[in-house]
Length: 290
Image (cartoon, rainbow, N blue to C red):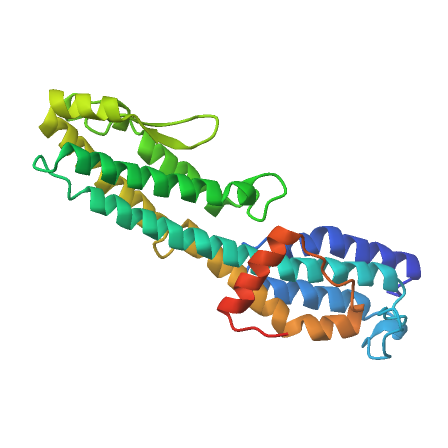
């Protein structure tokens, strides 16, 4: 069937709104991306003027051999932005993965507290853990907020929720008569997500039931470390998302030159400060030079 200018315009619009939606879902695989772009090329093949896209680009970066070069150019602008976004997201999620591992190690350290540990030592070690947890929580606040790099990303959301729930778990120490770390003075502000330590409450718990308080801390330490390590384990949320992002990044890198020849260059990405910093971290980690 002949392809008219109007039908091709509709095909391009459909391609952008539906097919690219799959590409820009970083849970898709590289194989999916290949199928998407092959389908896009096939849909354009019916037009004698747009069979190869090798007639050269205009001075403005458009492929004027296409029936609708502007839609194709806009599509490439979107791909350019997503190329940057994926790399920035990979860097930020990698940082979260590293920090989660650090929190797991810190929690395991709390597990070495015994009844023979001094009150001041216990308080100091708990405060250090609280400070590290708060730094981690605050570090990614902007990322998961509206408009942030990790907004809506399940891996980041689950990680923050899971570790907060681990700190707030009221079943830790139940066998010892405690209702979680809250009875030892550690609580999380529901408005800010930040943890705090009440030294007086901790000392009272240690004075009233030292063995039970220590057992509660050890139970918490084991559970928190297990939750954190599980988040980073092979096949779980964070590694899966990083793998998906990596597939998208490498597939785009391998094909973007040919796409630009076929569809136009598109506008260069203009990342904000947050994205630019994460992109620089990605490029530094992967030894990418301009």
